[in-house]
Image (tube, rainbow, N blue to C red; front, side):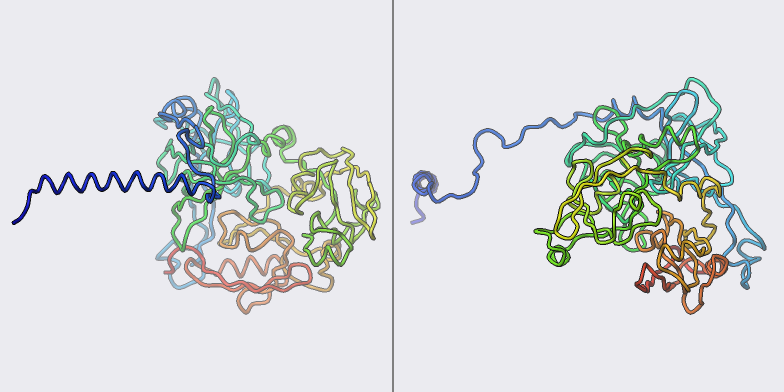
Length: 478
């Protein structure tokens, strides 16, 4: 007999109910053995996700602009057999696009330096329809934080509101707005993935976000849920040779930029306070060797002669433990602490020296490099490598420990350069492939011969160390 199907089903359900009750009583009996936090009836975290980002689009989009930058580029094939086929003899023009946002009704606009820094001609498109393009001029710039203040002649323009980037937290919703791949006024939403990311620059304090950022988004705003700009979209990390977003983007915190905006407008440059030291991390081994109980602080590796630190009797081998009462837990915190003050300010340093803790008062000065940049204008890369260099002067050679050496001293590295994150200011380039580099002209000449898709090798000095690095230039070789 096949039996009664209905009876079998009811019997199975009854057996399942009995087993469920038994397991529940067993779980209660085992309660004393649970050592983790178990979910209850109430949610562990309560939050409200935004029903729509359209109010942000409506409020902020009109003040976001598309920037068209035209620059003169020396043909990489000018001296090759294909020069007439590709570009013809001599330089040619290339146009790039980026994003920016309007600060004032009379036309002050903020964007990234790498969008317009070496441009011969800059135009700004305003409005969702982008029917009008305004010529723009550079008012002030700073390469350390990759910003430029532009000005167009216009009136009654819509503006953004600058927020407080210190108030955001990992997990907060944010919106990136810009012109990725020339699709203007594109909104992408995501969260703050992390704060305080450092990528090798002196004032790195990036906001990491998974809101999609792509080529063309550079210079556009990162906006919080209050519609306030809390960052400038600046960098992406991509896999392989793909230029697209993989969910790792970086924005410069707006508070860092706001601290320099008045000087950019009035003086044409940022004015950074200067302590006058070179420093490094304190490893557990170094801490033990200096008699420090635990690793932390910033170890002074060199004091610049006649600098504020030198005048305050800061010495090589001192370990800076605190800056104006704030602990220096990691050496990378020190530049940001100094940048939060102004030239002329007196700050208190707590240092560890020969087993004793001392207090030193330092009067900060203006960073000397800023004076040099103000007189010389922005360093021009003018090469496919995206690296600005200068000749090695005798006083700089002594200061950096390069006495008796020749090479091209790195001033700045474009964020779009294939060497970004590898080369740093004050590195000394001494060889490209097998060609010796003895001057800035040697470097420019060597770089001018290279073309997209080629693999290069550079050799450079960083302090006493010598580093080799091989990389492929982006694009396809022809």
